[in-house]
Length: 141
Image 1: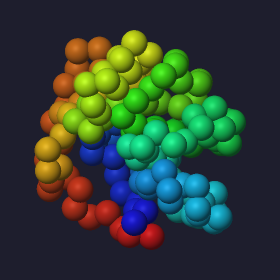
Image 2: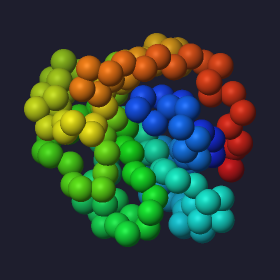
Image 3: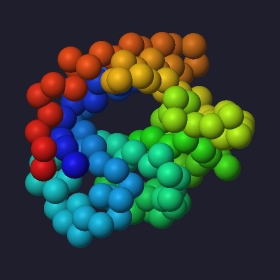
Image 4: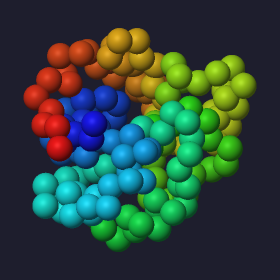
Protein backbone atom coordinates (compact mmCIF):
# COMPACT_ATOMS: atom_id res chain seq x y z
CA UNK A 1 0.00 0.00 0.00
CA UNK A 2 1.24 3.50 -0.83
CA UNK A 3 2.33 5.61 2.11
CA UNK A 4 3.70 9.01 2.98
CA UNK A 5 6.64 9.35 5.33
CA UNK A 6 10.14 10.74 5.64
CA UNK A 7 12.98 9.20 3.68
CA UNK A 8 15.19 7.17 6.02
CA UNK A 9 17.43 5.39 3.51
CA UNK A 10 20.47 6.51 1.59
CA UNK A 11 21.63 10.00 0.78
CA UNK A 12 18.28 11.64 1.61
CA UNK A 13 17.99 9.98 5.03
CA UNK A 14 17.07 12.22 7.95
CA UNK A 15 16.88 15.38 5.84
CA UNK A 16 13.15 15.93 6.42
CA UNK A 17 12.21 14.97 2.86
CA UNK A 18 8.50 14.13 2.89
CA UNK A 19 8.13 11.25 0.45
CA UNK A 20 5.30 9.43 -1.27
CA UNK A 21 6.29 5.74 -1.38
CA UNK A 22 4.55 3.38 -3.81
CA UNK A 23 5.07 0.32 -5.96
CA UNK A 24 5.29 0.49 -9.75
CA UNK A 25 1.81 -1.01 -9.95
CA UNK A 26 0.40 1.64 -7.59
CA UNK A 27 2.14 4.36 -9.58
CA UNK A 28 0.56 3.12 -12.82
CA UNK A 29 -2.94 2.60 -11.41
CA UNK A 30 -3.44 5.67 -9.18
CA UNK A 31 -5.49 8.11 -11.22
CA UNK A 32 -5.28 10.62 -8.35
CA UNK A 33 -1.51 10.40 -7.92
CA UNK A 34 -0.74 14.03 -8.75
CA UNK A 35 -3.53 15.25 -6.47
CA UNK A 36 -2.16 13.08 -3.64
CA UNK A 37 1.35 14.46 -4.18
CA UNK A 38 0.34 18.12 -4.25
CA UNK A 39 -2.30 17.96 -1.50
CA UNK A 40 0.22 16.33 0.83
CA UNK A 41 3.02 18.69 -0.26
CA UNK A 42 5.51 15.90 -0.74
CA UNK A 43 9.09 16.65 -1.74
CA UNK A 44 9.80 13.33 -3.44
CA UNK A 45 8.16 10.27 -4.95
CA UNK A 46 9.91 6.94 -4.38
CA UNK A 47 8.70 4.16 -6.67
CA UNK A 48 9.71 0.54 -6.01
CA UNK A 49 9.93 -1.25 -9.35
CA UNK A 50 11.56 -4.60 -8.65
CA UNK A 51 10.11 -6.05 -11.87
CA UNK A 52 11.53 -3.19 -13.97
CA UNK A 53 8.24 -2.45 -15.72
CA UNK A 54 8.30 1.36 -15.70
CA UNK A 55 9.32 3.65 -18.54
CA UNK A 56 11.85 5.95 -16.86
CA UNK A 57 11.70 8.56 -19.64
CA UNK A 58 7.93 8.82 -19.23
CA UNK A 59 8.37 9.37 -15.48
CA UNK A 60 11.02 12.03 -16.12
CA UNK A 61 8.69 13.79 -18.56
CA UNK A 62 5.77 13.60 -16.12
CA UNK A 63 7.66 15.24 -13.25
CA UNK A 64 9.83 17.65 -15.26
CA UNK A 65 9.50 21.11 -13.71
CA UNK A 66 7.24 19.92 -10.88
CA UNK A 67 9.77 20.48 -8.11
CA UNK A 68 9.21 16.90 -6.92
CA UNK A 69 12.30 14.68 -6.73
CA UNK A 70 11.90 11.25 -8.32
CA UNK A 71 13.67 8.11 -7.14
CA UNK A 72 13.00 4.71 -8.70
CA UNK A 73 14.19 1.60 -6.92
CA UNK A 74 14.86 -1.16 -9.41
CA UNK A 75 16.83 -4.33 -9.89
CA UNK A 76 18.09 -3.79 -13.43
CA UNK A 77 19.08 -0.82 -15.54
CA UNK A 78 19.90 -1.31 -19.21
CA UNK A 79 20.88 2.24 -20.09
CA UNK A 80 21.79 5.53 -18.47
CA UNK A 81 18.62 6.85 -16.80
CA UNK A 82 17.07 10.14 -17.94
CA UNK A 83 17.75 13.44 -16.22
CA UNK A 84 15.25 13.98 -13.42
CA UNK A 85 15.08 10.35 -12.30
CA UNK A 86 17.50 9.10 -9.66
CA UNK A 87 18.12 5.39 -9.34
CA UNK A 88 18.28 3.33 -6.17
CA UNK A 89 19.58 -0.01 -7.38
CA UNK A 90 18.43 -2.75 -5.03
CA UNK A 91 21.32 -5.18 -5.30
CA UNK A 92 19.68 -7.47 -2.71
CA UNK A 93 16.81 -8.17 -5.08
CA UNK A 94 18.90 -8.31 -8.27
CA UNK A 95 20.17 -11.49 -9.83
CA UNK A 96 23.75 -12.03 -10.88
CA UNK A 97 22.71 -11.34 -14.47
CA UNK A 98 21.32 -7.94 -13.45
CA UNK A 99 24.65 -6.90 -11.93
CA UNK A 100 25.48 -5.22 -15.25
CA UNK A 101 23.33 -2.38 -13.92
CA UNK A 102 26.45 -0.91 -12.32
CA UNK A 103 27.59 0.07 -15.79
CA UNK A 104 24.71 2.54 -16.11
CA UNK A 105 24.62 4.13 -12.66
CA UNK A 106 25.59 7.78 -12.28
CA UNK A 107 27.27 9.51 -9.34
CA UNK A 108 23.87 10.73 -8.10
CA UNK A 109 22.44 7.19 -8.06
CA UNK A 110 22.62 4.83 -5.11
CA UNK A 111 23.06 1.14 -4.40
CA UNK A 112 21.01 -0.63 -1.75
CA UNK A 113 21.52 -3.92 0.07
CA UNK A 114 18.79 -4.98 2.48
CA UNK A 115 17.62 -7.81 4.68
CA UNK A 116 14.43 -7.52 6.77
CA UNK A 117 14.44 -3.71 6.59
CA UNK A 118 18.10 -3.46 7.56
CA UNK A 119 19.43 -1.35 4.71
CA UNK A 120 22.92 -0.32 3.65
CA UNK A 121 23.06 2.28 0.91
CA UNK A 122 25.97 4.07 -0.65
CA UNK A 123 26.91 6.56 -3.28
CA UNK A 124 30.48 7.44 -4.17
CA UNK A 125 31.88 5.71 -1.13
CA UNK A 126 29.30 7.02 1.34
CA UNK A 127 27.42 4.34 3.29
CA UNK A 128 24.23 4.86 5.28
CA UNK A 129 22.65 2.21 7.54
CA UNK A 130 18.85 2.17 8.02
CA UNK A 131 17.10 0.08 10.69
CA UNK A 132 13.47 -1.13 10.90
CA UNK A 133 12.61 1.45 13.59
CA UNK A 134 13.23 4.22 11.03
CA UNK A 135 10.12 3.15 9.07
CA UNK A 136 7.81 3.73 12.05
CA UNK A 137 5.44 6.67 11.81
CA UNK A 138 4.56 6.46 8.10
CA UNK A 139 0.94 7.22 7.24
CA UNK A 140 -0.85 4.85 4.89
CA UNK A 141 -2.79 6.64 2.17
